[in-house]
Structure formats: structure tokens, C-alpha cells
Image 1 (spheres, rainbow, N blue to C red):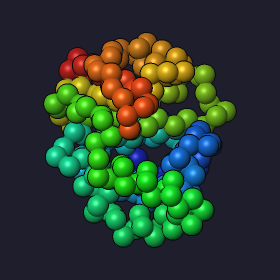
Image 2 (image 1 turned 135 degrees about the vertical axis):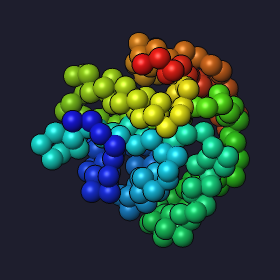
Image 3 (image 1 turned 60 degrees about the vertical axis):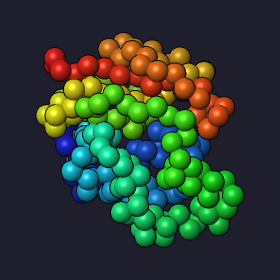
Image 4 (image 1 turned 135 degrees about the horizontal axis):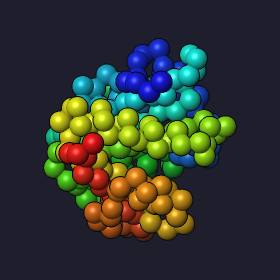
Length: 201
């Protein structure tokens, strides 16, 4: 069953994130940080946050938010005390790397162009590794689009790597997404801004 995320889902959402994204920067910040991050999304009225639940287990999720003034930055600032506490272990392990990335996320555009007006920006889709290849990611993406449309979005936008990322690009292309812009993140990382018109279901 696919539905809007609830508070009771957050621990399992974090479990899926950790299993789906090993070695990613956000994962390296630890479960307490991920709990704060997903709770922040859940608390935001502009967020679009859906899960797939089967027999009480969350098997996947999709999360993002409507394009609003301030966007993720304002949400991060509102939750700043909780983020700071959750970041302490990561900062102690990798002080320079973590500090640089967090400052970059909060206080610079990192070269990223704005999403089209009236967009919902998809931040992440996570699926339990043992459920990959069965179409669950497609279903979660469609559920995200449905919830985004219900909140007034005309488009869904997302960013993804341009290089060595054929699988993800093919996944979004098959689901109706096209390249809206190309850009360089942090001056060196080639990225794509992709979008889909969701006005017609």
C-alpha cells in the first residue's frame, strides 16, 4: 500500500535509506541525522512524502517538497538546533569534509539552477535492496506525482548526475522526465535538472 508518510514510519524510512544508499554522504552522517532530516520533511506542509508499506513494513519511500521561497534552506534553519546535535558524531569523525558540505548546502546555490515555477522537487527515492527490480520505484514515483499534483504542483523536478549515471537517467526518462537544464555543481560535478509535466495524470 502506498500512502502519505506518518511519524510512525520514520525509523523504517531511515532503515531503508541506510540500506539503499550505503557510502553516500548523508548516510555517513548517521541515523540520528537522518531521523532529524526526515522528521523535518514530515513537519513541513510543503513537503511531499510517500511510503510503500506491506504488512507493517516500509519497503520504500519518495520525498521532496514544493518549490517555495527559501525551500530546504529555511527548513534546515528552522530545525538547526536538532541538526547541529545530530551532526556532532559526523563532525568529530570528519570535521573538514562535513563542515564544508553542510555550509555549502545551507548558504550557497552550488551552481544549481532554479526548478520551474510550480514544481515539486523530488529529493530522493529509496527502495529496500531486496525489492529492487520489481517496479516499486516506478510506483513510488507515480505516487509522489499524484500527491504533488494534489498539492498544486504542475511539474516534478529533480537533479541527478550526468556522468556514469545511465541507470538513473534511463529510469527517469522511461517515466516521462526530460532534461530541463545542465549545470556544474560546485564547479566540477556535471549534473542534470530533469522535469515532468504532471498536469495530466
